[in-house]
Structure formats: structure tokens, C-alpha cells
Image (cartoon, rainbow, N blue to C red):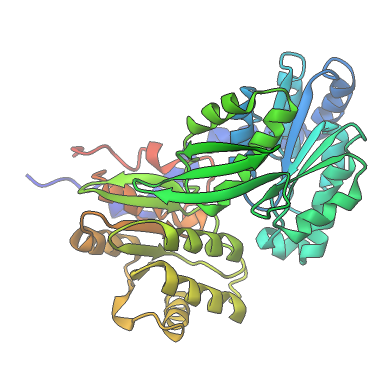
Length: 436
């Protein structure tokens, strides 16, 4: 007897509603925190200046790489990591950890202007790490100048005895050195950086080896993470660890035990000696360029790129410069291009950009049926030693293609699933293999 179809297959709208039901509890908690936000803000501000005044708070800000950077710093320091990046969650973390921990690591995020200054007042950071400035909030913050000015409010809140750890390879981050009287440490590839990435080598299975120069000595890290976007987080973690009194060899050992975060350049094994790289949380120009640069340098027999609706703003605008960058990137990075965006116009625009850059037309697969068609194609075509990277936007959930290729009986193919608290790998709409 054949497998019975699930409700998610027969009624796609049911899958979408089910996803919403599954996150109802998280939504209610978020609503309660939002309603209690002003009260939490006042309580945390007072608490930080009294019972939690001896707790050292390391705060990570920036457009990209905040979560990975905060994750690595917390690992290097062996200290608690905050649970959220908006005002109410940050206030709750201060109230929760401020009196119990010598240090905590917080990730501070904003979505519009005039949000960072209140966060900086509440947190009173001892160390601020700035990862990057980019186009993540171009629809709300408009320009990079506005973005960097807003993000710099956290750096400005540092006391003269504080420390700012800046990405020396990003000019908009380096600009912030003039916005504070605190000490400055620059991290990056540039030889003049205080913590310098002297060498980056990628290996297979996906991972990387870093040779880092700091204080006249050379450190080596064999990291489980992969990607040029993960280099600065390692440098920043070592810089903060040393400043906080952790021996650098011990910090390196702690960093080597850290695995990639969910769907952030995450190595994922597939059958028949095939590996996938899952990077489908953000798809703005800077993250696309970094992912393609990494894919170009990763060792593999053949390289595939599964691409969703990448490169445009939330309003669907595709800038010519972005398309040129995408086209040039795929020519250097991969041998096969699989386009799975739901919108046929998006697939056509991206395919045209790749062809104009010289990518072979016969190596481009534009799939009208999206993710299910991608599963069929890749099951048929992938060979041992191949590497496939999935790059798309969070609601597209390209991760489902990798899960299906790994043998999980994926029955939910809704085109959009937005709840960020819902993890596809734990969603009941994706039953375990053998389910009927």
C-alpha cells in the first residue's frame, strides 16, 4: 500500500496555518514582551546601574555576522549568551544574567532609526564589537551613512576605559573609531590590523583553517565553520578573549569546538559523499558576494548553486550593479546554477545576468516547480564529491531541499513560511523517514 498523503500535501494552506499555530506560543511571548517593553527597559536600566554594575557586558552590533560573532565570543569566554537582539529581550537578559555572571554577551539589533541610543543607555556596554555595515535595512535606514551613524550609537556609549573591536576591512565600521574615546582594536585581513587573518584555507569536508597574527605571535585554528564571513567573528572572539583575560591557546581550543549556526553557512552532509552548504537566512548583495566568493574557493569535484530570490530589495527592485555582481560571482563560483524562485520573472532576471557574464546557458536550470523540482534534479544529477550551496531568503526555506536529499520525508512545500522561531528540522510537517 502506498504512502498516504498528509494534510500539508493535500491542502497547502493548512501547512501555512499549521506553521502559524506551531509558533503561537512564541508569538504570545513576543507580544507580552513588547507590551512590557517600557517597564522592562526601566527595570533593566536601573538594574544595570545597581546589582549588575560589576557584570561586564560585551555587545555585538552590525548589519551582518552578529549572531555568529556573538556565538563565538560567548564560546571563547565560556559565558552566557543573550537570547534575543531587540529591546525587550535584551532587557530580560540583563535582568536574568546581570547579577549571576561576571560577563554576558549580547547581540543588539535595530530595524529603524532612533532605536540604538536607548539600547546603549540601557546596556552600558564595556566592550562593543562592530561586524559590518551593509544594505540589510535599506528599506528603513535608506543609506549606509544613516546605518553607520545609527549603529555607532553603541560605540559612542563606551566609557574611556571601554573597548571597541572594529572590522578594519569595512570602511564604514573603521569610521566609528573617531566616535569614541575608548580603546580601539581593529581586526581583519589588512596587515596593519591588531588581530590579522594572515591565511585562510578551506578544506573538505567543509571547514577552514585560520592562521592569525596577534601581538607578535601566530595562532592556528582548525574551525568547523566555513566562509569568509566567518573570519572576522573568529578574530573578534580572540581579541575580546585576550582583553578579558583568557589565554589565547585556550580560546582557540574553545573556538574549534563551535559548530555553525542554523542555515548560516552551515555544512550539511548528504548521501554518497556529497556536502551541502546551507546559507538561506539572508540574501542581500553583501551576503551573496561573500557566499559566492567562498563557494569559488571551496574544494569539490563539481559545485552547484541552488538560488532563490536573491539580490533584490524587499520591494523587488533589482539593481543593475547587483545583477552584474551576481552574474560574475556565479561564473567564478559554480559549475551548475539551479534557480528555484517562485516568481518566474526573478528566475529570468537572474538567468539573464548569469548568461551575460559568460555562464553556460546549458548549465542553468530554471525550475518552475521550485523546491520539489530541485529535489528531483539534484537526486538525479549529484555525484560523489559534489558540493551544493543553497542561497535564498529566510521565508523560502531552501533548507527543505537539503532535508529531502538527506532522506527526510518532506511533505510541506508551501512557497513561503515566515515565522523565524520555527525550525524546519523540528517542524511536525516534516515527518521522520518511514512515516505513513
